[in-house]
Every structure is written in structure tokens, then in C-alpha cells.
Image (cartoon, rainbow, N blue to C red; front, side, top):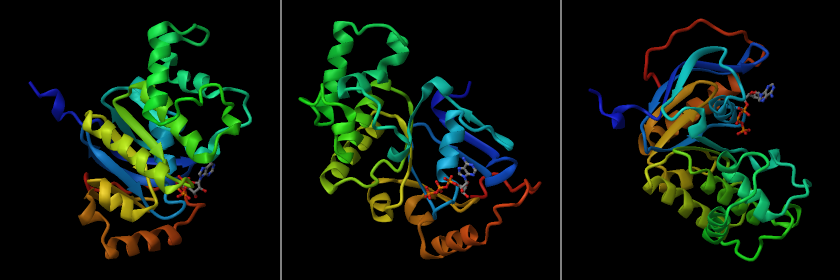
Length: 255
Ligand SMILES: Nc1ncnc2c1ncn2[C@@H]1O[C@H](COP(=O)(O)OP(=O)(O)OP(=O)(O)O)[C@@H](O)[C@H]1O
């Protein structure tokens, strides 16, 4: 019998994603191993966020399929910060406690042990003492810490992070990178959309380079070459946004 560890956390099979039948990113095929730490990089508009949205179920594939080893329930997703409504009147404690919603349901109260887990997550991200602060009164870096604490409580095997270190200070980036590396050490599978290639080279062993189609996937040093980055820039700028779904069938692992 095949060992469970051999089953990829995520398998993309000729996946084409788009909006209103216009592909945004196409022909993605690759296996992401369980426990992998993968950066998704590429020019603006390359389809990086679109891929994460599809994996959360927000977007249905136009073509192809993907398989999640842990199912939809096993996915925790951190959208870009600008997609969050900060004016919603909720305090930091309650926002972070939402990470436990699968355990407590929509209207349940927190047990003492669950409240302790919330306090523990806040302490882990350096936000002890901020429990009753409204989220609208947090700095961008503090808000990102709170969002990481909420994700921590979700305790998911597959984590999808969309530009998690964008527009925050260096100290917060260092702390949040350490948390991501901790999740990786715990055996979770992590896909993070990132723009800072130096940070990717330093911390992310594997990389998926996208430019509306896969330009490279594998060890970061082999993917982030100047040649491949130039190809990615050219493909992204040549892409026709009005194109229909094409029928090209690339070879598996062509990335
Ligand atoms: N809701 C939407 N409706 C229509 N088109 C969309 C929508 N969201 C994204 N797109 C288009 O899909 C393409 C890929 O966008 P996506 O946001 O996935 O790129 P990205 O690689 O994440 O870019 P960035 O680095 O700028 O965030 C772009 O042409 C974008 O305009």
C-alpha cells in the first residue's frame, strides 16, 4: 500500500483558472509535497492570487482539476490585507477567536481552554495586552500579527498566504517569517505569494514561478534564475486578457 506521506498535499492537473471564461492563469500541473514550503512568485497580474482563491473554493476551474489531500476543511487562507474590512467593530480577542469557529460554531461561547488558546496565540504573535483593542485601531503590522494568530488557531495542515509580509515593518516581517518557519517545522504545507525575491531565496526551499502559466517549479535556486525571470516578465506582458480558454495540453510537470 502507498504510504500516506507519498500523497502530495496538493496536486494541480492542467488547471486553468479565470473570470467570465477568460483565463487568468492556465495549464498548471504540479505536485506540492506534504510539508513543503513553497513561494509563489511572478509579475503583477501573473495569476498568483487567482490560484490561491481557486484552492479555497472561491473560484471554480475553467479546465483541469486540483486535489487537496486534507480536503477543503484542511485549508487555512490568509487573503491580502487590503481585502479586509477594518471598520468592522470587533476587538482583537474576538477576531482571533474566529480561528476556532469550526470548534465553537457561529454562535457558541468559548470554553475556558479555548479562551486560553486564544490568549496563547496572541502571546505567540506578540499581541498580549491588545485583547480589547478594536481592529480598526491597530497598525498594519499589528493587524497582520492578529491575522496570523487567528490562522494559528485554525490549526490547518495546508496554509495559503497571499502577500503576508506586504506593507509591514522589518521587525514584524522577521517575527512573522519565524512563525511561518515554525509552521513548516511542524510539518504543515505552506504556499505563500511573495514579491520579495531575496526573502524567498533566504527562506523558501521551493518556488513556483507564474506568468499566466507556469514558468518554473522546483528548488528555488533553480527556478529564480535571471533567464526564467525574464521569460516570466515577457509572458506576463504579452498575455491577451481577452483570450478564450485554449485546448493546449502541456506535459505533466512541464513547469
Ligand atoms: N475578480 C476578477 N474579475 C476579473 N478579472 C480578475 C479578477 N481578479 C483578478 N482578475 C484578473 O486576473 C489576472 C490575474 O490576477 P491575480 O490577482 O491573480 O494576479 P497576481 O499575480 O496575484 O497579481 P499581483 O501580484 O498584482 O497581486 C489579472 O489580469 C487580473 O486583472
